[in-house]
Image (cartoon, rainbow, N blue to C red; front, side, top):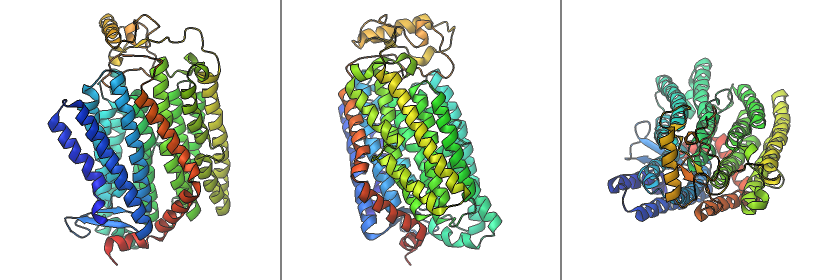
Length: 566
């Protein structure tokens, strides 16, 4: 079974090489192998999770080189669960993206650009979850980030390039800081292997150990979008195509949370920065949810709720008890699925009505009841309505806070309750504006051409040309005449306000709205909703599993023995 551990990393990388050799040809075959490899990764992830639960952590030393020389990959309960949830979500998002690519009549972008970058992203995420040392954790981050740079700026539109530039700068800064932290760790401990560091860091002077802990926490907090290191997220994620935004929001920030969980429990037990983590958790909850209350665009609302709910996970890590770690793991799995689902729904709304601006939406509960259900269920799940999985995770965290006692713990219990209520308010606001009320005058009509973001600067000399091209694309797509509504892009001659989300396809080309949503997009979103509900149905076994994972993390011995063989 140990031989299976590297496969979630190797399979996507090997298939990416094959796809690059094939090039933008054999579209159906390329779609098939993309789906097949992610399906295989999902099956492997389930097998590794079950094996780790039954037999303890699995480890493999690539090339049979022992630590600290060799590359060590480890699958325990935590990494197995994270691999399983992330594999399921990435598979669903790929199906969704296939529907979007077919709806846009765009074969070149998804097959030639999106698929290879997406598979590399999956390989990077898997490497991060399985990494048994700091260097390979860094490598996993970099594989993931290089692919994310491509996905975030795919199409090269001005809006995406601006957002991507911010993302690149922040990511490069965190990567440099991560390299410095790795170098310092090796200098003081003589190794970067997690199992060896678990013993050697205890002999390092407390001041140096605290500095290393603070540096690693800063790196992971940037990746996880923990306040005050989260300002980059609301302006970066919403500009990408809907499948990219969904997988970024649902998954990439949780890689940072996972890294915090792994290092805080294995390398820094009884950490001295627990109070700082709880302060950051409380600030993330408050600032994130207040930011969401102030937004009127659905994608930005969801981006701010993402920051807010990262605070719940950091709350559990900061308390560092068995109950709180278990609650944090439940909440990570829940949030990956639910947040991804909500962004997929936002993409469906944009595809149908031409905008995610709440002031221009309305009547969707009557005109699109299936879409209303697909939004309502994960929205209530995110708000933590009993008995959904969001409630299970929050209840576990709040109970752990009450049991721990102390000022910070009680402050976070109160903050968690307030944030949950405000999340319910925000979701109710979205429901009332977009679904429940009547459609406002001038709402977008079917067949509206959403202009390319290429020319989104006011006063661009090529606006007329952009409008003509958009009209041609709309006619070719069979979506009706370009004059059937007011375009949101610059091709209409209207200025695009700062921070506006400009709708476009994979390559930034204009797309045409339709009331008949592509079935792969609807099916993938429906399965994602069902996956979120399955955590409720399986709440008992899930909680039992995460409690065992938390016990294993805090004990540290099973992980160390699996890697070092003693």
